[in-house]
Amino acid sequence: MAALSDDRIRELLAPYVVPPGTAELSASLIRQVSEYLDLLLRWNARVNLTAIRRPEEIIQRHFGESIFTAGHLAARLHAGSELLDYGSGPGFPGLPIQMVLPEVRVTVAESQARKVAFLREVIRTLGLGAEVWSRRVEEMPGKRRFDAVTLRAVEKMAETVDDAATRVREGGWMAALVGVGIEIVGAEEFLIPGSEQRRLLIWRNVPRGTSAS
Image 1 (spheres, helix red, strand yellow):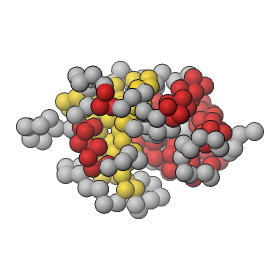
Image 2 (tube, one colour):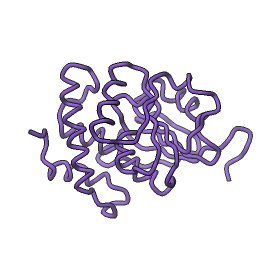
Image 3 (tube, helix red, strand yellow):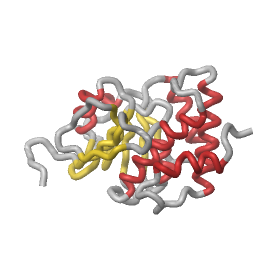
Image 4 (cartoon, one colour):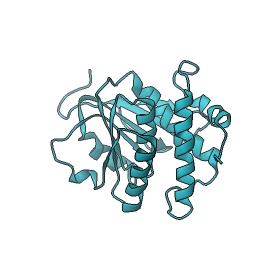
């Protein structure tokens, strides 16, 4: 039996749709979220994937914030765009972005073996097209770049943002889900629904040595 009904999942996710009320949470997307949630709860009982245990909070904090990010990226990416989820953990926000934007080529980067195994199980079960990079991002070929990079719940966020920026193509985008106290010069801020402490920062990457237009 599913941890939450489809109607309850839809209700919990509705505030995170961007722009509000303009995108339908399709039945197929809700089913994928439900399957993903059930997998996460089963694995989390024996492998520490997330400290959040309540299904409703998982939907809001993990899936909702990821769908919110996908909504802001949707107008900025096109079919075939490549996105890197830097330090994906149990797949957030990268895999829900892949679910919402199947035409985008998502790579989830995670070096911890148990989390890698979980990511591959989610991708297999849901039939997603995402790729798993199972080593540290620093070990990627130096010339590999992406149209967008996402970050969430990574250690030393301020320093990691600088590292992640080197993986963004010229004219690309970066989205960071960060807590209060992290400031990034030139970033456009979007408050995540239902939270005064967590916010989405999204900004256009500017190559070093140039000025923003």
